Image 1: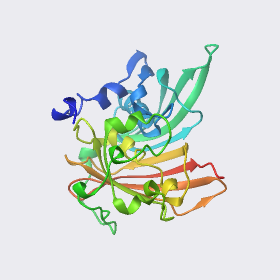
Image 2: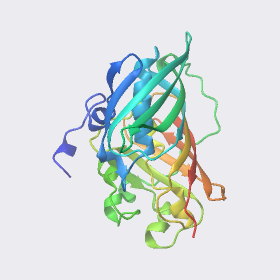
Image 3: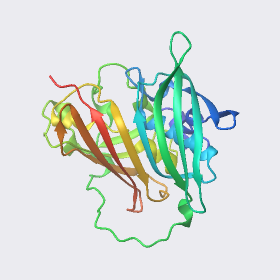
Length: 283
């Protein structure tokens, strides 16, 4: 364990917060330097990018908590300078809606749009406590019976810098792909946290839904699985402690699959849900 991991980071004072921080250039326009620490191979992770845009919208809108956020990933983002433009679509008493786009620059200095987002924000602390649900937390073995990226080879050849910034402990029942014997079930489950000990908040939930190995691995495929579209619903503010993330895929067709994710906190509450459409390379 590194010396940094011995001191628990706090919300607002962690690597995640520093690497998602945006700088106001002018009203509605923000600058950020996308960190290479959240990459897989050379591309920046989609959940980290969604958190970056989520932070910018939280500053641009009168409400600070994402309730629902949908992103279309147009081109792969690279580490380095980026520009975010936000637009307030509507503001209300309980919900505000905005949109945002992230741009980088090509070799000739022209703007290239990487991601476009539409989101509604509110105040999670004002929601009623009434819960009526048939959903149940995923059955994951205790953390000391699960396995992390450090326990085996990288699932994707090349750099996976993001794994150094995460606390991931994968359910052995979803690790057949790592042993050369994928189950074919399209399931992935894990304990999740940030490596520096920072507790989860609504913004880091946007990362959590896209931080596990792709379900495509357990279906029997390998390689990068780029996100086409990702929608996240944040249901409540997570309690301190590790999260449990469960992701399932029911249908792979035409080179695309869906990933349905649930995120549960230490109080056994469903704190976030998502659906993602991703592209896979067949053959």
